[in-house]
Image 1 (cartoon, rainbow, N blue to C red):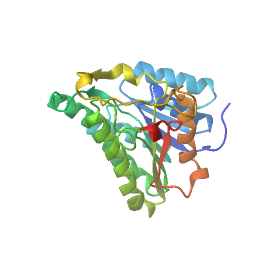
Image 2 (cartoon, rainbow, N blue to C red; image 1 turned 180 degrees about the vertical axis):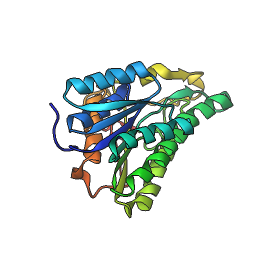
Image 3 (cartoon, helix red, strand yellow; image 1 turned 90 degrees about the vertical axis):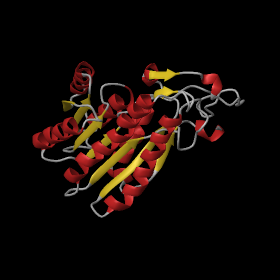
Length: 262
């Protein structure tokens, strides 16, 4: 059964086929939102849509690569033409990419991470903000503890750089978009039970890691147990809802205190 906190509202979630994106889409749908499910893998998006409909909600599959301008413009236009409004945007799509020493990291690997994580965030905002200016709304950018509080992940230089840049965009745009009634905030997860690590390519870790000894269980709140997708999704829903109506330009670290040890 769906709730009413997002009743009548339309949301867009990028990377909605799995992980945090899927969790956010389900949470928003439970609150009554119609959710545009954007991603590159149709079968995963269809699975998310089936889950949403099993809960009594609804949405639409939007096939697009966040790094492709033409595909993003078409997808956002498709959602807006269908619904006539856009109230919530969750810019979630991202990759870990390649983690390697800076002198070993290939330009093509650098470009890939920039294209998805940073250009993808830019294109998401570029094509949605103009659709939100009339009514206002809420944007949530999914960053990370890496690049915002944590800098000890071996070889994750470009990943951390994109996550730091996402937070900088949020802070900058909070002022720019405030006059239009658009709030923008960042969620920075720590260790979360998702499959994103399956897409991480790590090389020569010993050349980049710095030995560090942490207390037993490096997530203080849970004794080392990673957080859940649902815990991140609940924070996203808070920032998307009217409960956070006076919150903008704010990062929230969802990591059980993990980043405070780093």
